[in-house]
Length: 271
Length: 182
View 1 (cartoon, one colour):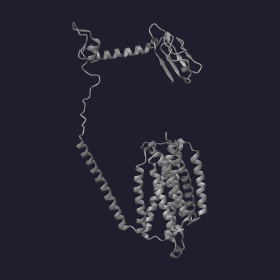
View 2 (cartoon, chains in turn green, red):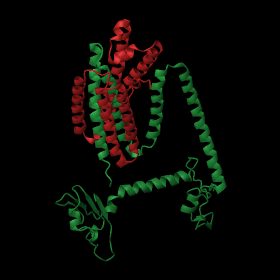
View 3 (cartoon, chains in turn blue, brown):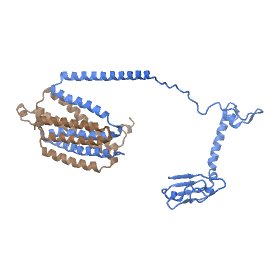
């Protein structure tokens, strides 16, 4: 507890001790206790009436007994604001002339007792509700047949989308196959399959594991090292230099990437 | 070693990578999935090193070991709250490596095309692959290299900016915004 406010007063009796010394000792430095029962001895042990003290462990106990007197300016401000708004309601044309509008609930109910020689107190209940009740919209409860029909319709739409995508994809691949050499088609097969498998696999990753997913796909992407390994043996010094740099950087990422993923996953302990 | 062995190893590695990503559907299977990824990566790298087409394998091993030491050290020292920045920084290295590999293929292709036919027969490894490409295959290769270098460069610069933003080192307003065009 950082702030405690106590207000327990019993008429004609001493205030009961509710917040005891061991509780005060367990509060951290800088905590505050506002004891509103200080005039009758206080609910906290250690309250000194009319004074604000600080205990040994840094807890402040406020025991003022004259809080209403301390609120004089706040009370005046609130009351003055209300009167000002009342005057605004009474003089809607802003010409200084009082318009005693008996249709206005505030003037009729809150401020008028007699009007034109008649007693008008107590006032009728207010015409305007404080919160307008919204008309309840009808919630359509679908019958079982309607639910099944809706599901079948949604399934049909999804089938149409999938078949269209498959048709366009198949046509494109067949078109590529007509014009591309066989060696390219071999690599293209691998590419298309890996895109498809990757899509399906990633879809199943649970939401809490998206950051480890980022780390592990980064580690796997250092497979580029194979390209550099193939290139380092052949060619000019520039090729060898760039390939060597690539192997070095991919090496950093292989070890670093998988270790980072393991550290991240180590945080997920079965509780 | 035969080329077929390398291809088989690649297939096994690919399966392991797919299992590695698929294992992220649950928290316990995710820890096992990281090991699948590690084994797959190790298998692919070893198969390439001992297979045909690679050269200077001792230098490669030393470079991998050196990079590995740095990677291990950095990954263990960095605080948990700085993990995303670290992943972004490491990924920028991969983007740069992709750019270099693309450039290398472009340079090697240029070198091979400048050689006469007798010299091309004596080539080994990567350049031998390039030497046997037809014109159509060369054009396809050029398109692939263009895409590879482009995507790699975007990865490199994007990851660096991501690192800067995550580490709080970078002002996140677009430069044009500061002169009023947003």
